[in-house]
Length: 111
Image 1 (cartoon, helix red, strand yellow):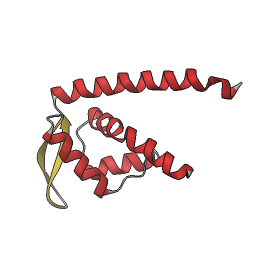
Image 2 (tube, rainbow, N blue to C red):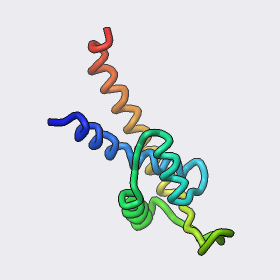
Image 3 (cartoon, rainbow, N blue to C red):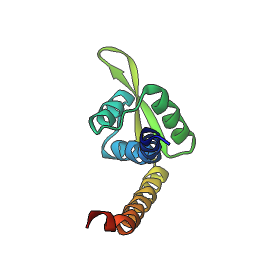
C-alpha cells in the first residue's frame, strides 16, 4: 500500500466540504474555486470539480446564476441553496466530530 494513495483518498473525502465552504463565503466561479483549493494544497482538476458541482446542483445543494464577463461569454457562478447551507452545517459538524475522534485515538502518538 502506498502512502500517496491513502493521502489522495483522504483529500477526496473532504473535497465536498471544502468546495461548499468556499462557496459559502461568497458566490464562486469554478476557476476561483480551483485556485483556492490549489492554494490550500488540495490539488483538483476541472475534470473532478465540474461533475461534483453538477451533482451538488442536481441534489439541490447548489444553484447558479449567469453573469456577464468582460473577457468572454457569460460565466456560471455558484451559490448555496438553503438546503445546501443546512447540508454544509451537517458536514461541518461531522468533520469536527471526526477530527475529535481521530485526535483522541491518535494522541498517544504525540507524547
